[in-house]
Structures are given as structure tokens and as C-alpha cells.
Image (tube, rainbow, N blue to C red; front, side):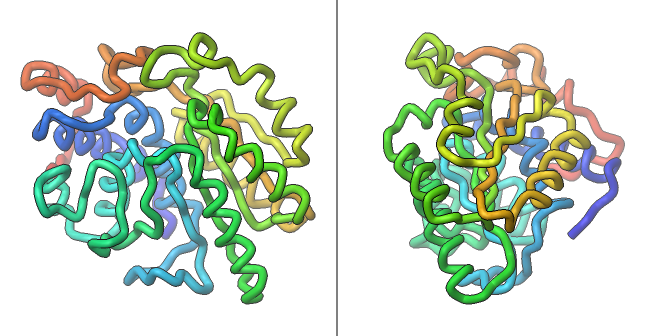
Length: 283
């Protein structure tokens, strides 16, 4: 599954183009967080995670990924398509009637790569822990990855899950928190501050890693590899990944306004002009 850094950087740019075009085409979707998590998805699927194609729901003897903050489905769908899970051309059906690419990932239409419906925030970690325990029962040595948003940590179910994973020594899970400091209504510090998140996670019994440059592809690969090295030591692992909402598009960077707002035609062209590649492969 491993690709060169240059190939991955090009893929990240292409993914950002996909995100903008998908949400603009239907005037609906969540570009901000999707753009901010592009390096994470590019690194995970292009370099770090051990997965198999064709996709099977059971996922035996391979790593699993669960997206908890399901509203950033555009980056998830682009990543899956660009890594061979389903045809790239299907990205053109995003959020349309009868599409498998719903606004939040669903399972009933059998989209390859999606193992759980998500978007009702706060539930993903519980699901991922269950999958990780299942692998332990099966003697499967592979890992479970999950991505959460920082805003969804305001949901109480997360903290039950954090407590449970540490108490039961679920040490085959790597949780990444998209720590961009923003949510739909504003900055997380203004809506409901998370306080000293590092100290909280550590107090809950997790191995805590932090990466300040979550939009640097090589840094993201490095922190994920460090996290892998920490698994199997009796504690679950969590990464605080600092990202910029809207990264890659100057008028979207650093603003919660683009959490769930699609660019119009003029804004789309402006954004695409900032995301140029020698060889475009737009769907």
C-alpha cells in the first residue's frame, strides 16, 4: 500500500480538488474539516494502514478504520476512491438521490470501505473499541484506527469509552483526534472548552502523542508510525493531531464558517486555482 512522499503529496492535492468539487456541485457538505484532515487520510491509506482489496465487511487479518466525525465524508470518499475501493467516477454522485455516497457514511448500500454509519457524534470510539476487542478474541494481530473531531469530545459517551479502553487494556487501537479548535458554532474554547486535553487523556490511562504539524504529510506519517510502535504495551494510544480547518484554500483556512458551507462557482474556481497539479485526474 506504500507510496512515495511525492506521490502522496500529489494525491493530497487531488483529494482537496475532489472535496471542493463534490460539495460545490450539490451546494452541500463539509469542506472545512475535510480539507484539514487530507494529510491524515492520505498518510493512513497511502502509507501506514495494512488493508486488503477487494473490501470485506469482516476485515479479518487486516487493519480497520472507523470515521467517527462522519460529516467529513468528502475526504473519506475521495480517499477510498483514489485507493481503489470503488470507481473514482462515483464521486460525481456525492449527496445525490440514490447515491451510495451520502452526506454521512452509511452501510445499507454497501459502499466499500465503510464499516459503520457515522455522523451522530460521540459514538465512533465505542464502535472502534468493540472491533479492537473482536480482533483480540480472534487472535488477529492487526490494528484498529479511528478518527474523531475535537468538537465531538464534548459528548459524554467518548469519556466512558476512553475509560473502558484503558481499564480493559485495549492496546490494539490508535485513536486520532482532529484537533483544529473549531466546530460548527465557533471555536471549541468558546462553545465548550476541552481544557487541558493532553492531561485528561493521560489521566484516563492512554498513551498520548501530539503532533503540532498535522498538515505536514511527513510529520503525519511519522506520528502514526510512532503510535504503531506504542501498541501492544497494555495501553490504548491516542494522537492529538493539530490541523487547520480549510487547509489548502486560503479563504477557508482557520475559520469555522466553512465547517458546513459549500463554495459557490466563483469560490470553487478560486480554490481550484490554488490546488494545481502537473497531471490532474479530476473525476
